[in-house]
Length: 224
Image (cartoon, rainbow, N blue to C red):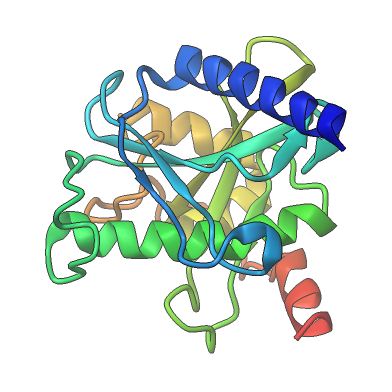
């Protein structure tokens, strides 16, 4: 038991150092969940406000050892990260009426929905996710995934970016591929941010027809 705890502690330190390499220095404050994620509660949130403008918000509870946790075709294990253009304000984080509090509330909800999903499904770069309309907070929201900062075809650990996108962008990604959409978002300087106070990078004329639901619908209704 002590040996297992030592392995997890060593992995946590190594994983944290790799996240700093990708995200810049971590803020010294952590938003701890009242009930731990491991026993059915919420995620702790970790903040990275120093490398790029705005704030990165990441998880650290999806991979508890080098070979145990959320996995996909490019990472043996990974954690999630989302970004907002708003500067970090922990004072406003629990005030959804403020600009930072509003996006923080949304990001927190998305991460807490996607974390258990990632334990059941392989979520790969360029895939999209659509939440059913009736869900609280996240209902109807559209996401695209990417391997953040990925330079090699495969790595033993990495960060999966979750980026909220407009519905027309999701439909475009499903018709033309997620990579094609991400290239447009990068060209417009909207990547990697989830703030939707921007115009879509595509329009209805770029689509061949209506989009379809992602695997999320089947997973959600099969587990609730």
